[in-house]
Length: 358
Ligand code: DAH
Image (tube, rainbow, N blue to C red; front, side):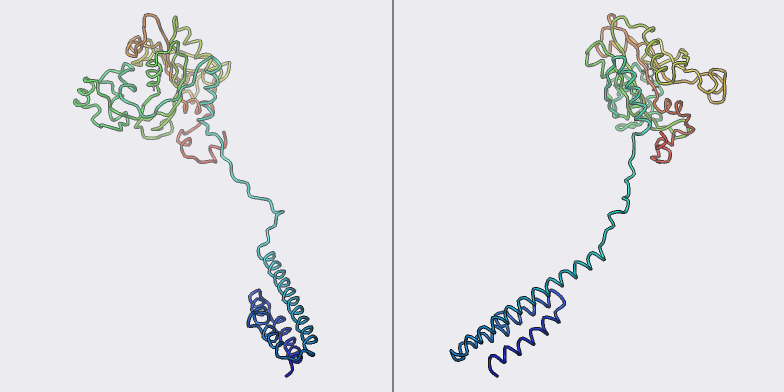
């Protein structure tokens, strides 16, 4: 067969090969089979040296045309395969950008944090500082420096979560304390922050310190083993019970309403003398008496008193020169009063159906 006939036959084979190549791999295989180093057109070109010089220009021209034709066909096939691949990708992986998105459910501040912030605002407005506190304390700060006697029942392991040494309340424990050794516990009250503030010796003091406290109580509608208090301490020259009453009346009316009445009932706390519990007039019956206030017309809201001189002296503050008052407010109690919460345990569950209401 002459070379020119061979090229004609090759053209037919090339067309069939390329037309049958419907994937990128097959197109590449066709290119190698036709134009590669051992490809059929390449082989045919090698024969050029063997033909007569007169034939060479015509055969050469034909071979070049064939090469260009093959290259063009390969390129066209490749681009139509690419277009098809893109089309099928668009069909299978289409995203409808007009569909509305899924909004992530955003949480919000917990009721207890919101109430603590509100209390901070009221006291900051009266010039108080807000101090952080520590939840792990020693018996010294939680009890001893607050004038609590060695045999005070709140020191027993039944009323306090001890972290180190569970001998609390035993004779061995009492001996340790007589030697001035301290155990480590989860604080049962925020009052220990009074001692930390006094020990710094920067007077006067006008501070509150909110935070979590722990007591081994079984949770029920009115008790949680973990709850929050806002401690307050004022120490300055010439502070009187009148300052205490004016301050707490101002706080209570800011939190609960300007028309609320207050009542100061004598009580006992080891670290204040005199001490009181403070009641606010019932907002359901306005003092008439109803089931909400257990028919007394009053609801207990906080403990307070004039700082015992012993407490000042133990922390190195001159009790002849300085006097002060302190108070402790139960945050969950304030929340329950504000929103008439039937069960404090709901505050701990993290159930958004409950929490999202506030
Ligand atoms: N720490 C007391 C308690 O947990 C509350 C309290 C009462 C705090 C009187 C005070 C205070 O600062 O003066 O029951």
